[in-house]
Length: 503
Image 1 (tube, rainbow, N blue to C red):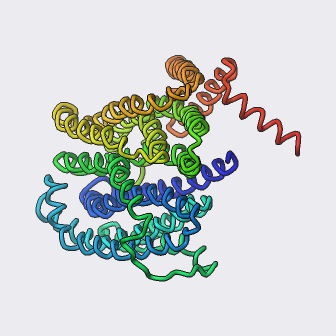
Image 2 (cartoon, helix red, strand yellow):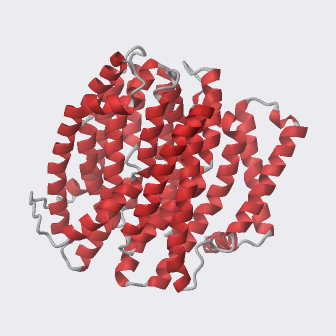
Image 3 (cartoon, rainbow, N blue to C red):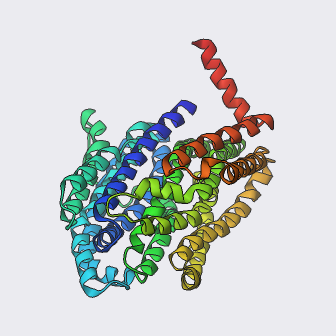
């Protein structure tokens, strides 16, 4: 598993880096203004449907296929779900085409009529993305359940290169080429994940059976999972809705800061939880409660080992990070300053999302997905209420802070619900190493602050400042953890030494 996680992290890192280059190329070409606002608004509806439906679809399909595999009906069940997915995807595409203008007028109420109309026009073109992604992630669910993670991890790389090429080669006074490139890019994802099925001549047969015995299990899971996994996306919609009432370009800056924040979340958290969920689902079927709890605790601890220094690093270097990533082309210093501050407030949410994602998937694997509904609803409600309050006093920064606070509130509820299950088996949710992570992180932050204050490290240009702080911070953090005799680091050290001895 450790090798799979490492390779997954590498592939996801490449996917996110190329995705980052895609965002940078768009920012450099169009800046933070009218056209970039229109593009992000136009992609919001297909992106919202895609993220909400696909997260729930993928997460629900894995335990269903595991159950069908146990009964020897995996391929037939997959055929039926793929057939149903074709029908649903066509229906949703038609819905987006018909109601694009109405939805845009509600979600981007601060846009003038001309801007809304242009965003609705491009939304209709990109509506096919939603249909393609539904089919893509049905294939993804099958591949992940079959432990074929590498194809899935690299899914975004071809798409990112297509959009980058279109951005660099197309004109900067129109987003038409960018919109069409986005459609072609998402088509490449569908081709990418369907290739193994075509190569192995998978015997697909169109068949819809609403009386399929696995459909009730899927339906019972997908509702709560859709709600839970859509929390982040619904928060983004609320953020965009209020950002559309702020000065032009701030919606784009907010979106860019959110992408930096989710880069860490996707590469680290998804690498562990994607693989872990397949294991959890199979252990849940075997009703091996003790091992399931221990695996959940172990993976949460490994995620937090890496997330804690990243959170502190982003808080310390938010301005430098944003300038290095976006300050080029039409992006201005003023835009970068706003983006760095937004990133600072977003960074706090990383800890909460880590815990929520791990504990949420734990409940899915034990067929207790309904327990994720309450914390998810509270996160949404808390974010909406805080957004309307904080945006009045802090502007766009209040939107980012509201998201972070809401995630922490939801985390506390997730923790309380999971603790009951963990206490029954005498397994703590957080390992004894977690306090050590915060101690080491505190030392790291203090050392970096002193170096910035009393040496020339704070007066350098952004690139050397960023990379030197990263190197020094990581070194201090892991040295302190070694000094504290942290169990997870000792385990990693033992694995490395064992491999060196074999070599």
